[in-house]
Length: 237
Image (cartoon, rainbow, N blue to C red):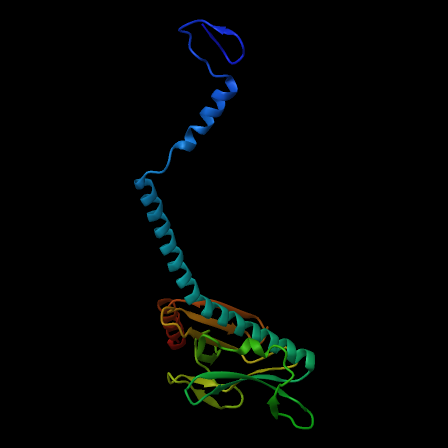
Protein backbone atom coordinates (compact mmCIF):
# COMPACT_ATOMS: atom_id res chain seq x y z
CA UNK A 1 0.00 0.00 0.00
CA UNK A 2 1.02 3.59 -0.66
CA UNK A 3 -0.29 6.86 0.64
CA UNK A 4 -1.48 9.38 -1.93
CA UNK A 5 -0.80 13.10 -1.81
CA UNK A 6 -4.22 13.62 -0.30
CA UNK A 7 -3.36 11.33 2.60
CA UNK A 8 -5.53 8.44 1.50
CA UNK A 9 -4.29 4.86 1.27
CA UNK A 10 -3.93 3.69 -2.36
CA UNK A 11 -4.21 -0.08 -3.00
CA UNK A 12 -1.30 -1.79 -4.72
CA UNK A 13 -1.51 -1.73 -8.55
CA UNK A 14 -3.96 1.15 -8.72
CA UNK A 15 -3.33 3.89 -11.32
CA UNK A 16 -2.46 7.41 -10.42
CA UNK A 17 -5.11 9.78 -11.72
CA UNK A 18 -4.08 13.39 -12.10
CA UNK A 19 -6.39 15.98 -10.62
CA UNK A 20 -8.75 17.61 -13.14
CA UNK A 21 -6.91 20.94 -13.04
CA UNK A 22 -3.54 19.34 -13.68
CA UNK A 23 -4.95 17.38 -16.62
CA UNK A 24 -6.45 20.52 -18.14
CA UNK A 25 -3.18 22.42 -17.80
CA UNK A 26 -1.26 19.55 -19.40
CA UNK A 27 -3.71 19.46 -22.32
CA UNK A 28 -3.42 23.21 -22.81
CA UNK A 29 0.36 23.13 -22.91
CA UNK A 30 0.52 20.19 -25.29
CA UNK A 31 0.09 22.26 -28.53
CA UNK A 32 2.74 24.72 -27.39
CA UNK A 33 5.36 22.06 -27.29
CA UNK A 34 5.07 21.44 -31.06
CA UNK A 35 7.45 23.57 -33.22
CA UNK A 36 7.36 24.50 -36.92
CA UNK A 37 8.84 22.16 -39.45
CA UNK A 38 11.39 23.33 -42.01
CA UNK A 39 8.85 22.94 -44.82
CA UNK A 40 6.34 25.15 -43.02
CA UNK A 41 8.95 27.86 -42.46
CA UNK A 42 10.05 27.81 -46.11
CA UNK A 43 6.45 27.95 -47.29
CA UNK A 44 5.74 30.97 -45.08
CA UNK A 45 8.84 32.75 -46.38
CA UNK A 46 7.84 32.04 -49.98
CA UNK A 47 4.36 33.50 -49.42
CA UNK A 48 5.84 36.61 -47.81
CA UNK A 49 8.22 37.08 -50.75
CA UNK A 50 5.37 36.86 -53.28
CA UNK A 51 3.30 39.40 -51.33
CA UNK A 52 6.28 41.76 -51.07
CA UNK A 53 6.97 41.60 -54.82
CA UNK A 54 3.29 42.26 -55.58
CA UNK A 55 3.25 45.25 -53.23
CA UNK A 56 6.38 46.76 -54.79
CA UNK A 57 4.97 46.30 -58.31
CA UNK A 58 1.67 47.96 -57.40
CA UNK A 59 3.49 50.82 -55.69
CA UNK A 60 5.60 51.45 -58.78
CA UNK A 61 2.51 51.62 -60.99
CA UNK A 62 0.77 53.90 -58.53
CA UNK A 63 3.73 56.28 -58.48
CA UNK A 64 3.85 56.37 -62.28
CA UNK A 65 0.19 57.36 -62.45
CA UNK A 66 0.32 59.77 -59.53
CA UNK A 67 2.19 62.56 -61.35
CA UNK A 68 -0.22 62.74 -64.29
CA UNK A 69 -3.33 62.38 -62.14
CA UNK A 70 -2.15 65.07 -59.72
CA UNK A 71 -0.94 67.41 -62.47
CA UNK A 72 -4.20 67.16 -64.40
CA UNK A 73 -6.29 67.82 -61.31
CA UNK A 74 -4.11 70.75 -60.23
CA UNK A 75 -4.34 72.46 -63.62
CA UNK A 76 -8.11 71.89 -63.72
CA UNK A 77 -8.31 73.56 -60.30
CA UNK A 78 -6.21 76.47 -61.57
CA UNK A 79 -8.74 77.09 -64.35
CA UNK A 80 -11.55 77.20 -61.80
CA UNK A 81 -9.57 79.53 -59.54
CA UNK A 82 -8.75 81.87 -62.45
CA UNK A 83 -12.43 82.18 -63.31
CA UNK A 84 -13.35 82.89 -59.69
CA UNK A 85 -10.53 85.41 -59.29
CA UNK A 86 -11.62 87.36 -62.38
CA UNK A 87 -15.16 87.62 -61.01
CA UNK A 88 -14.03 88.61 -57.51
CA UNK A 89 -11.52 91.25 -58.66
CA UNK A 90 -13.59 92.59 -61.54
CA UNK A 91 -10.49 92.26 -63.73
CA UNK A 92 -9.51 90.06 -66.62
CA UNK A 93 -7.25 87.19 -65.64
CA UNK A 94 -5.00 85.39 -68.07
CA UNK A 95 -3.04 82.17 -67.97
CA UNK A 96 -0.04 82.73 -70.21
CA UNK A 97 1.72 79.79 -71.88
CA UNK A 98 5.43 80.54 -72.14
CA UNK A 99 7.96 78.22 -73.77
CA UNK A 100 11.44 78.23 -72.26
CA UNK A 101 14.67 77.60 -74.15
CA UNK A 102 14.22 73.84 -73.72
CA UNK A 103 10.82 73.91 -75.37
CA UNK A 104 9.01 73.22 -72.08
CA UNK A 105 5.72 74.98 -71.38
CA UNK A 106 5.51 77.18 -68.29
CA UNK A 107 2.37 78.97 -67.07
CA UNK A 108 2.16 82.51 -65.66
CA UNK A 109 -0.84 84.26 -64.12
CA UNK A 110 -1.48 87.76 -65.54
CA UNK A 111 -4.17 90.33 -64.81
CA UNK A 112 -5.51 93.56 -66.32
CA UNK A 113 -4.67 96.09 -63.62
CA UNK A 114 -6.47 99.16 -65.06
CA UNK A 115 -9.21 98.10 -67.52
CA UNK A 116 -10.41 101.71 -67.97
CA UNK A 117 -7.12 103.62 -68.07
CA UNK A 118 -5.01 100.94 -69.74
CA UNK A 119 -7.30 98.35 -71.32
CA UNK A 120 -5.64 95.26 -72.71
CA UNK A 121 -2.43 95.77 -70.73
CA UNK A 122 -1.64 92.73 -68.57
CA UNK A 123 1.04 92.37 -65.93
CA UNK A 124 2.04 89.48 -63.71
CA UNK A 125 -0.49 88.83 -60.96
CA UNK A 126 2.00 88.86 -58.08
CA UNK A 127 -0.78 88.83 -55.45
CA UNK A 128 -2.21 85.59 -56.83
CA UNK A 129 -2.88 83.12 -54.00
CA UNK A 130 -3.35 80.03 -56.17
CA UNK A 131 -0.40 80.24 -58.55
CA UNK A 132 1.10 77.06 -57.08
CA UNK A 133 -1.66 75.14 -58.91
CA UNK A 134 -0.09 75.99 -62.28
CA UNK A 135 3.20 74.27 -61.48
CA UNK A 136 3.70 71.41 -63.94
CA UNK A 137 5.91 69.13 -61.88
CA UNK A 138 6.23 65.69 -63.48
CA UNK A 139 4.00 66.56 -66.47
CA UNK A 140 4.13 68.70 -69.58
CA UNK A 141 1.52 70.40 -71.75
CA UNK A 142 1.26 68.60 -75.06
CA UNK A 143 -1.31 70.95 -76.58
CA UNK A 144 -4.00 73.50 -75.79
CA UNK A 145 -6.59 73.86 -78.52
CA UNK A 146 -9.40 76.39 -78.56
CA UNK A 147 -12.71 74.65 -79.00
CA UNK A 148 -14.79 74.84 -82.14
CA UNK A 149 -17.83 72.74 -82.90
CA UNK A 150 -16.03 69.59 -81.72
CA UNK A 151 -14.03 69.00 -78.57
CA UNK A 152 -10.86 68.11 -80.47
CA UNK A 153 -11.31 70.31 -83.52
CA UNK A 154 -8.63 72.99 -83.80
CA UNK A 155 -10.33 76.36 -84.29
CA UNK A 156 -8.93 79.89 -84.05
CA UNK A 157 -6.30 80.77 -81.49
CA UNK A 158 -6.94 83.15 -78.63
CA UNK A 159 -7.78 86.79 -79.15
CA UNK A 160 -4.13 87.87 -79.16
CA UNK A 161 -3.43 85.84 -82.28
CA UNK A 162 -0.07 84.82 -80.84
CA UNK A 163 1.05 81.24 -80.42
CA UNK A 164 3.89 79.24 -78.95
CA UNK A 165 5.61 76.09 -80.15
CA UNK A 166 6.57 73.26 -77.79
CA UNK A 167 9.56 70.96 -78.04
CA UNK A 168 7.39 68.43 -79.89
CA UNK A 169 6.38 71.05 -82.47
CA UNK A 170 2.82 71.51 -81.18
CA UNK A 171 1.35 74.99 -81.49
CA UNK A 172 -0.39 76.51 -78.48
CA UNK A 173 -2.45 79.67 -78.00
CA UNK A 174 -0.43 82.15 -75.98
CA UNK A 175 -3.12 82.78 -73.37
CA UNK A 176 -6.45 81.74 -71.87
CA UNK A 177 -8.43 84.83 -70.87
CA UNK A 178 -11.08 84.88 -68.13
CA UNK A 179 -13.62 87.74 -68.11
CA UNK A 180 -15.12 89.33 -64.96
CA UNK A 181 -18.59 88.14 -66.03
CA UNK A 182 -17.49 84.49 -65.66
CA UNK A 183 -16.94 83.71 -69.32
CA UNK A 184 -13.60 82.72 -70.84
CA UNK A 185 -11.91 81.15 -73.82
CA UNK A 186 -13.04 77.57 -74.40
CA UNK A 187 -10.09 75.21 -74.57
CA UNK A 188 -9.04 71.60 -74.32
CA UNK A 189 -5.65 70.97 -72.74
CA UNK A 190 -3.68 67.76 -73.11
CA UNK A 191 -1.09 66.77 -70.52
CA UNK A 192 1.38 63.88 -70.66
CA UNK A 193 3.59 62.44 -67.95
CA UNK A 194 7.35 62.83 -67.99
CA UNK A 195 7.52 59.22 -66.84
CA UNK A 196 7.90 57.01 -69.91
CA UNK A 197 6.09 54.22 -68.07
CA UNK A 198 2.82 56.16 -68.10
CA UNK A 199 1.45 56.42 -71.64
CA UNK A 200 -1.90 57.93 -70.71
CA UNK A 201 -3.10 61.40 -71.68
CA UNK A 202 -4.70 63.78 -69.20
CA UNK A 203 -7.41 65.80 -70.95
CA UNK A 204 -8.94 68.98 -69.48
CA UNK A 205 -11.89 70.73 -71.11
CA UNK A 206 -12.98 74.26 -70.21
CA UNK A 207 -16.38 75.44 -71.40
CA UNK A 208 -15.94 79.21 -71.70
CA UNK A 209 -19.66 79.97 -71.58
CA UNK A 210 -20.57 78.03 -68.46
CA UNK A 211 -17.14 77.87 -66.82
CA UNK A 212 -17.49 74.12 -66.33
CA UNK A 213 -14.14 72.32 -66.17
CA UNK A 214 -13.97 68.56 -66.73
CA UNK A 215 -10.99 66.23 -66.79
CA UNK A 216 -10.39 62.59 -67.67
CA UNK A 217 -7.66 60.13 -68.53
CA UNK A 218 -7.39 58.58 -71.98
CA UNK A 219 -5.19 55.87 -73.36
CA UNK A 220 -3.32 56.53 -76.60
CA UNK A 221 -5.83 54.41 -78.52
CA UNK A 222 -8.83 56.16 -76.96
CA UNK A 223 -7.38 59.54 -77.86
CA UNK A 224 -6.70 58.43 -81.45
CA UNK A 225 -10.28 57.18 -81.77
CA UNK A 226 -11.70 60.51 -80.54
CA UNK A 227 -9.50 62.49 -82.92
CA UNK A 228 -10.62 60.29 -85.84
CA UNK A 229 -14.25 60.83 -84.91
CA UNK A 230 -13.72 64.60 -84.64
CA UNK A 231 -11.95 64.73 -88.02
CA UNK A 232 -14.75 62.72 -89.64
CA UNK A 233 -17.40 64.99 -88.11
CA UNK A 234 -15.55 68.12 -89.28
CA UNK A 235 -15.21 66.87 -92.87
CA UNK A 236 -18.79 65.70 -93.22
CA UNK A 237 -21.15 68.14 -95.03
